[in-house]
Length: 253
Image (cartoon, rainbow, N blue to C red; front, side, top):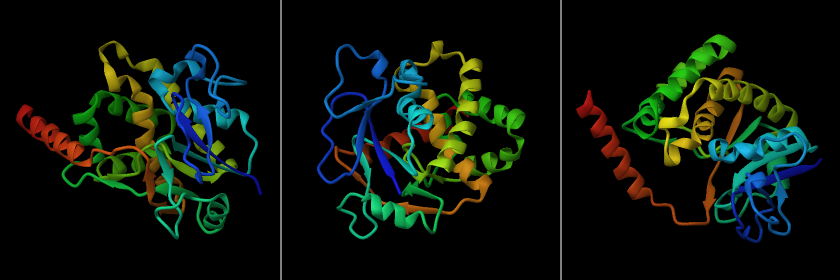
């Protein structure tokens, strides 16, 4: 059985020893010069590499969907990696992933719990709420069998983020077919002229919310793993900003 775990990056980053990850340059089409040695690039074959400013790591996901031949596929980031189920300080090994996927369908990172916000209100306070509203309308029109799962998941206070996942490639292909059908339609309908900074990464942000929707609607079995963050994660700062956004939303209402 072949297993490939990709680590999406947007510039040269050293993949820590023991990660068992293959780095892939997301947005390679927009880079000047050669990519770092040992990196795959997402601008070969069927690709959307030049749309990386709005799709972020999803350009690597799309490339993997269209161009990789493997039994099991995983996607993580140059700073976030799945941890071993037996040692949260060690990186997930391919044989461990294969073992887990014998009894479940999808491996996910530990869910993030917002406590004081739903997925819907968190998105509206952190980004452009209309983007999520239009996404819901597209699901209602094109994939109505997923609408109930979408509404229920948006009203929950927890969710799996980062577009990190591992699953069998056949199931991954099904997910990508569904996901990009929605995102490409969303791309046609949104006006991004008023989106600045991080909000321009809208399709990556929306995809983070849609993975749970797809899993819930399909009734798939999941296994959560801790993840190892190799940079500095400012959790307190994020918590303060989330509380401030929530308070601002209450005041504006």
